[in-house]
Image 1 (cartoon, rainbow, N blue to C red):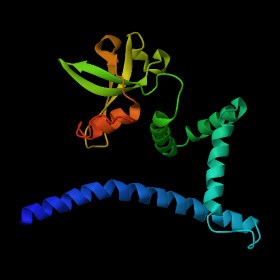
Image 2 (cartoon, rainbow, N blue to C red):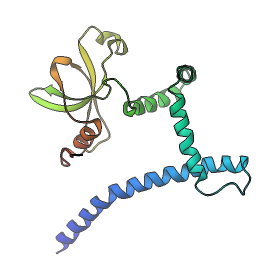
Image 3 (cartoon, rainbow, N blue to C red):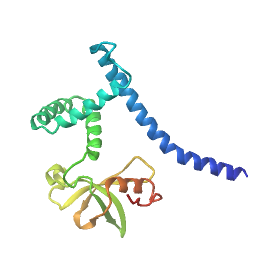
Image 4 (tube, rainbow, N blue to C red):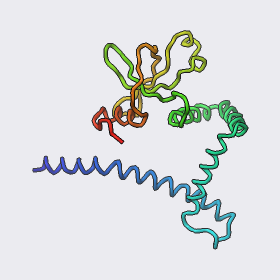
Length: 195
């Protein structure tokens, strides 16, 4: 009896946890943007003009405008100059570059960045993501090979391996990056969702 009760509780927990964590993350983002932008707006606007939620709306507008401005060549160049300053500051350069590289992995791109591939290792196939194909962006000792960098995530862990793979030992897969990441991180338990 206790075994069936604990099984039901675990099933309920596993069902509710992703929903609760997603809602909490969205709530945290909304509350944080409301606090930061709301305080700034209250300083600028008269009290009668401010209403709850205006800070969150202003935060979304700021994010949208920054995304829009980053499409302009001159803004990208100015941003790159600012980044160069950060890249020369001790400690900050390490932290900032790690965050920047991680989030760049999920940025929408027009090229094959993040392409899902199967890498052959000793007859096995591992699912991975191409992180770098351009030879000039690889370390100098790797540039003479016809290889690409591939990230191989581990199931149920935040981690993985970045490996240099010869093009002949990998093949593209017909999976979106999101589908492949979900599939790998859950060890294939979720299966491939349709739609």
